Image (tube, rainbow, N blue to C red):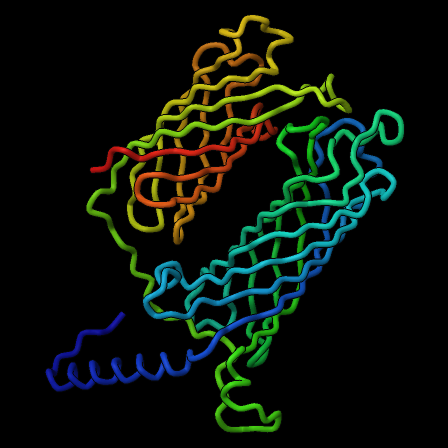
Length: 386
């Protein structure tokens, strides 16, 4: 915060200094900032199934490589969010007995939100990743009957890392953190207890400026050297809205299997209909509450009548917004018969806003707390705002 100055001439001097410093900062942040990042992971499984404990007792190990971009436009979307970086990555892991699980690989996208002030040498950050896991060895009634965690050779890859970035040299950071990794197909194919892994990670990040070769190609140059790391601005002003209230309508479909259908192509359709009230505190934070109508065709084995395959619920949640994306987490409960799904369900989702009126959303509806019920693929509209 800028301290109060008693003398008018001091205020003028400070204003001039800030303007000149901003000019210098823009020049110092000249170029295109990129980085490579390597991490090693190790930890244990949080297994909720019945048959794999012996295969998972030795924990897991994995490595990942990331390539990141750092937005640096002074008027760009990233400034109010602390100037997060984003990019793509690849994962290779050992998660247990190879004969049961295979050697999973994953491709994913990530975004890295810094939590500490820009001047800190040690910066804490939170980084969610989302992608696709492949090369899994899945359940087979003959060849792999013990694998009740994975029912298909591909699954969703999700990782959430909370850690630190220590500025070691001009170009390198030492990385450390704790992270949670999840493989699941959302009951699209059974069995699907999923794999949940919790552990630690260590790594190294190398940063460079792609425009250095345009500035000076001499490997031994000591002049015309561009900054290799982006200097984040201090300003993280949150924007408030003239119309923070809205009513959203959202519909989604999905497909699931029952456990008795595992190893077959038999599946059922699902539907989610949602009416949401949304209030946005500012451009980053918001809350939602609303009503749900669910249809689960897989209930037909216990509830033959179509009308009995519907459920009704209420929910509330939190939204974290950045650019045109929203990371959403909602928790809800049924009123009336929950059809054996227990009272609590969650809906973690990612939401993309094409404009102020229409949006798309992919989410996971759970049952019995955190167990996957089905994946929601949906689209929504926002007709009312005030």
